Image (cartoon, rainbow, N blue to C red):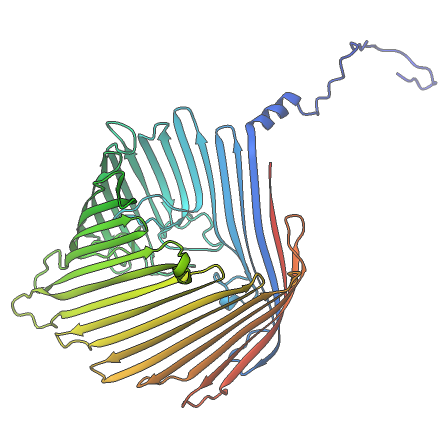
Length: 588
């Protein structure tokens, strides 16, 4: 201690010793063993991102209607990453959209995300778990659930033998993109919640009996695509049971399903749910042969039958596209022989499943088929045929009245539709060609509609003139006639395309021309469209540096017909564009 007079006084002392060869310990430094364990746990990781931003300036235009601003920004990007560490695996992916013209933006915002998903999976010795957030499919395909992707949250639990698994979920019933309702579970008036469980009670393996039970309830709107902000709310719930069993390594498959649904199409009108809406399904398919060959070509055959009965008012918020009110039986078959494939399906269907009094019962009988054959590459005297292929498809459907109640004063039903399409083509080393012809008729014997006839011919060809020059073209010609209107119309559509690159691949040129000609009783203006672009790649994109390119792009449209055009027959616009692309990828 220092005294005021400048002298010092010792109050206490300590001795510090350090052994030779042992460094001093720094408590702030990370433990080397922990770092080693972390590096050992984190086995691998990868990431990839592809991003593009384009600035477009309209330098000249003529006769545009409601022309936007001269300068427009647009862009898009998609990124994904994957990490694996110990028993964990984490995947994340998403995309974003950029458009300065909000009126054409998918979400009405200049910059917004599109779809995204985050998935985490843990592989334990006895228990497997997983979590999904964002857009994902629940893996259910049934009367109650469609397999489409929805935004939401789900958890999965299962044993290591996959004999027992459970899934808990909360998802939106509609298709949605953008940053609104990011988690997909924040809005209780647009949310489905429930569970699904799968068990193999007697044995494990692909042939074992599998029982799947599912349940959901919730409310929301199922209309719209992309951004859904509809205020017309539905409410519903449902449960279902599926059984699946296979024999002989999957050659014989049996399945059955029953679903019960309660659905109110508009809760603002009534809170009473429609009850006693059920659906049933039974299906069997068989592959009777194994390792069968004929004429040194492998042969495979699949035959099956299916029965469905869906009540008149059956509806599910989780499967809005399901067609209700049908009692249907069908048989089908797939045949494979070498390069030959053929499929046929025969079905019989009636409606008014609930047998509502005063309502008629209609019957639909249909037969559909399709097939194709791909030849080997021809050689010798038939080398000019290239590698040809043939296609054939068609259907016939008869819709008539099965039962008419006493005193019914409504319309009758008696019509038939049929269609036949034949086609083919061939591929060569530097070019290809293809063509098809469709013959379709509709006959209404009840006199409620018009008999129609349509004929459609399509031809296409492409030629790789040089590794840096390619040409393509296609022509469609159609005839449509209506008996009731005593009319016939003709339509011709011609497309031509050119794509070229310079030797250094710095310059590229693309040209597309479309001609649409209409004549006959429905005479529409002839329309010519031309789109062209000349581009220059200043810097080619790579994983270490962005790419930069500029282009001059233009489009022109000419309408020629009997109509009077307030803004003239011609319109065109020319753009100068700057594009920056930044692909990134890496891993460890």
